[in-house]
Length: 354
Image: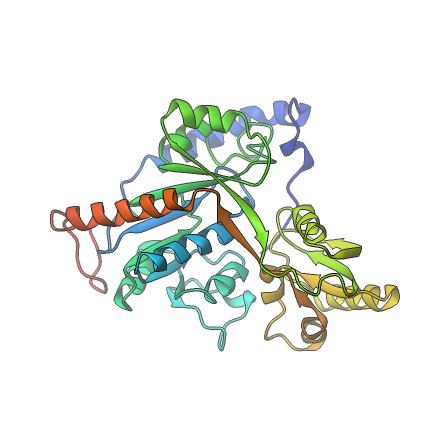
């Protein structure tokens, strides 16, 4: 799958390129708007929490989804993850296994999610949700898929990078938005503002729509030992600069950085180049958990880089965690009350619209 860097003008206000492409963006927005309105989707017998975003590219969905799973376990629920498996060749539905799969098979994010809860990859999301329900999962967390109408979502959380917001405010290809911002926010239940910043327009729209706003931030899981040696930090995520800044803020000395496109599957040449740069500069390679899983199970230079590389894990912390607990608890309780009134076919036998 071809990977690319998001155009810089997507994140600049009053961009001439964005203005020039805005008619195409408007056409794309009409199509995406109709698609989102095609719901309500099907039910598979367990509540579904969707963690999505408004823009193309990363906003912190995956670590937020992991924290949502942590909260579900605090509520004595048994969560599982559902992913499209971006970047992987498996159409699914398939239960992700670290013993069997690599990032080329199922994508990097599912491999990371599978360390925290059962994870299914499926291009057809209803079939993936049925598989999760069949193995005893009692709440499904969708990592992405907010704009996909095939499943009925019981709680939709929209993650917004507070520093980047919605960029230039235009719809793809003129900007990063996946559809009209107001239409997307009206379909959400809550917005999660991740990190520091003032995302402006999206917050104003959410306030007018009466949507819940929650603040969260990223924290380093590991802090000890980071000051013992200088690092070469490399990352292929949507915003590598955020990773480098978080690493430095945790006390690490970052001597050199290397940036790659989002979801980049490191080639042998890439791995050799990182190793040579690190050795030549006397630095220890360090990267994100999501980047690190792309090196697993491949052998050769990727295996040698994996052995030499330290991982810098992070977690999303909600500033008012009880609000998230209440939101999830209320959603699951409401689903249970409504469940007897819903018409659905048990997992494995298909499903009908909710």
